[in-house]
Length: 249
Image 1 (tube, rainbow, N blue to C red):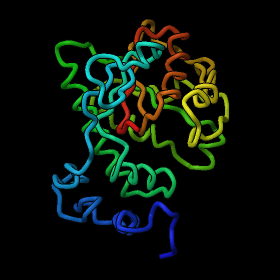
Image 2 (cartoon, helix red, strand yellow; image 1 turned 135 degrees about the horizontal axis):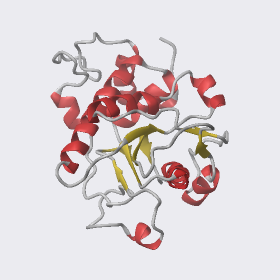
Image 3 (cartoon, rainbow, N blue to C red; image 1 turned 180 degrees about the vertical axis):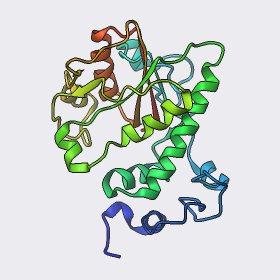
Image 4 (cartoon, helix red, strand yellow; image 1 turned 90 degrees about the vertical axis):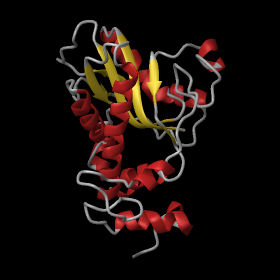
């Protein structure tokens, strides 16, 4: 196999290359151990995923003592809540990179399972206290980016979440109208400027009146993209917009 990018070198890269070599469907996507039918991770590898502890109730920032973090108290985000079960650390960060930049089918299989688990956790947390979403909306890619990549990883995750929560998937409700530059390497303020007014309701789309919307993406860093998308949905008449991501950076 040809030498891959820098993030595939060393011990971490050895495990990533196992995904690229394609383990059998009945094998763990990380270590290759046997797993049950329909599973993509063994219990040991699942336990390696670092959990988000004491998250901010608005932006999901880890290690917040209680309630909103100081940043959300100073500047209230548009999102009503961000739910992210895991930290963007090894091995989840490599899984997300392997799917997004290497179009790796095994990483995609693992991430789909994690999306189902995240949806189950959200449903359990909201049961009896929250009516839950009326629809699930994946963060859309700009058409140019979609043509380059050939898939939208947020849509793949949103499909699993919508099925698990048994609510409609509104994958064509909003569009990305600006081909924004990559958010990677940008600071918090630059990220917000980069995605400002980047989303809009699709022309001709019918938006459910006073709908409760759950956005889905793979990772949240500053929340700028999710906030910009929430802004567009509130302008269209949404009653409440929350987000679910697999990871919080």
